Length: 283
Image 1 (cartoon, one colour):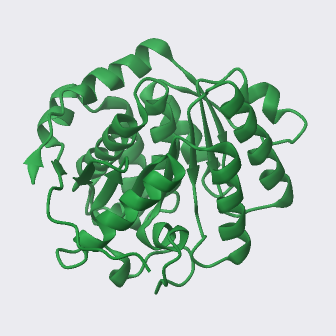
Image 2 (tube, rainbow, N blue to C red; image 1 turned 90 degrees about the vertical axis):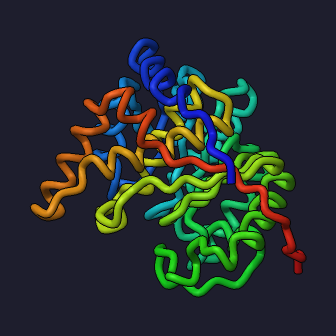
């Protein structure tokens, strides 16, 4: 492992505050309010339009597009595809959060179609969801990854190579979130070890990471955007951690997204590059 410089992180955050980019989010109603507030806290401007008759027009004005398969509906599926095609046509960066593809054949098939047609800049999911996109068996139930579907020292060579292969196949940066986050562009593999246990207990933190990555995509290349957004959000979670309960943590997390200092970001980021020999054999 080698340490990666993190001086880009405070600079990227300042760029967001200076530019106030418009981020088009087609996300689920469970997390829509938190996603909008997370973007506002970092200086971006959210718009959550999802009607099929207006999404293309709105995407065309945005600095990035973020889509999310959580709580999926027919209308949202149509809107995401229309917006994804428009973003591709106009070369607007785009990210898909493949929520639930490990437990739903509908979502898995749709995600594959969206990725093929709209060629997202970043594909985000937990490790179980990324494994499903790779065609592997998974052991999770619902939308959560099981303990077996987390990065460990034993499975890291396999997981890293599988993610690299998916990145090369799709042309997207892969962001596999979990206790340890894995990010790859098909060549380089990075691990992020920021975050806290309370983040996994708060509904919508994965969705918030998705839209925050979209915000960073508006000012950074896809690999840097995925890497730095993940570290940024994890550090904010660490700073927000509290024994006072989940309600307090929820509020403190939003406060940190707004108020965390560049100095804290630069010194707290735990990003390493993975170099170990890859032994994964595709099935």
